Amino acid sequence: MVSVKIDSVSKSFGNVQALKNVSLEIANGEFFAILGPSGCGKTTLLRIIAGLEKPTKGRIFFDETDVTDVPAEIRDVSMVFQFYALYPTTVYNNIALPLKSRGLSPSQVHERVEEIAKLVGIENILNAHVDRISVADKQKVALARAIAKQPQLYLLDEPLTILDPVSRVIMRAELKRIQKELKQTIIYVTHDQIEALTLADRIAVMNFGVVEQVGTPLQVYDYPETVFVGWFLGEPGMNFIEANVEPDVLKISGKTVLREREVFEDLRSKGYERVLIGFRAEHVKISKTPSTYSNGKGVIEGVVRVVEFMGTYYVVDVESDGAEFKVKIDPRSFSSSSIKEGEKVWCTIPLDKILFFDPNNNKRINIGGSNG
Ligand SMILES: Nc1ncnc2c1ncn2[C@@H]1O[C@H](COP(=O)(O)OP(=O)(O)OP(=O)(O)O)[C@@H](O)[C@H]1O
Image (cartoon, rainbow, N blue to C red; front, side, top):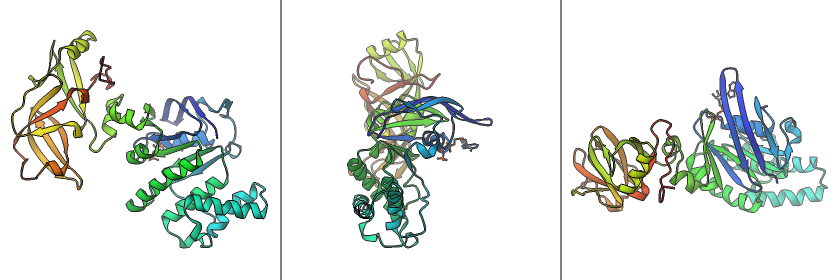
């Protein structure tokens, strides 16, 4: 297994700049996810790491070795794609072929096929033709074949996207188990935040060819460095509202929502008169009884616009003088009769769950103390 260093990589296709100065370091044995919306450059980056695409600028290193000009065939990586491409033969042969080409003896091949099949959970279908197995099993065979190559690096490009929702959840858990046993470096491309958050040791969140943030799942979720990362992660994404900073209070549309001298002195000393406040829907407490701001919490008055039942939770859209935000509520602490559309509500947010962003560049402002 290897570590991977991506050093200032850019890639253009004609006028399209698919990657803009991307730098990342992936540690030995790390499960590293590249997460972002469609078209953000994830696949291009993976293909550059595999050697299937050349960067316009920048270098790629495996451990200390510069592999930028090393052809794909000798980079010793295994790729698993969204659409598996299997040999039209039995499951057994699909796993055995890479082993044979590595020069293993027939008995070694047999032993290893059984080992890998067991690891991936396909030991019962070894004799089946790949045309006759389920989509989820086909993806498992693709993974087993990748493992049989015993590469120094695994590259997975949306391997679960093709599966139905139920198989996807099962395979996600399986992948996590397999990775724990494999203990290999894996780079995993996905647009699915749940996959990235549940599987990865660290995540790079990308947007428009740029890496917006790299961090552990908790870091990127709790302390997004940019508005995009806050918005992209979470269901629903983070709320953002523009607010005015006064010497000791924060106001939204002229109404005080937070009184916290230290924080606002800090913001004003940094030159901010306006900021974006960011907070997650699940950190808001909604109430029909009036509440006022006090130390350690902010209060936003508003009117309920929409109440949506999402199965395991409710999302309430609240409007406050033109600003809108979402509140997430556990059904156990909510009866749909209690909060109705059109009603006035008071929404409380703990100060340590409020982040501040620069409205000019959409980056998070570091506040001394609890704000990351
Ligand atoms: N061979 C190519 N020729 C021209 N443009 C390309 C090529 N490959 C990718 N692009 C463009 O580069 C940008 C990034 O594409 P890429 O496939 O890397 O994104 P992605 O994040 O993987 O998206 P998706 O999840 O939809 O595959 C897109 O605008 C895409 O149209």
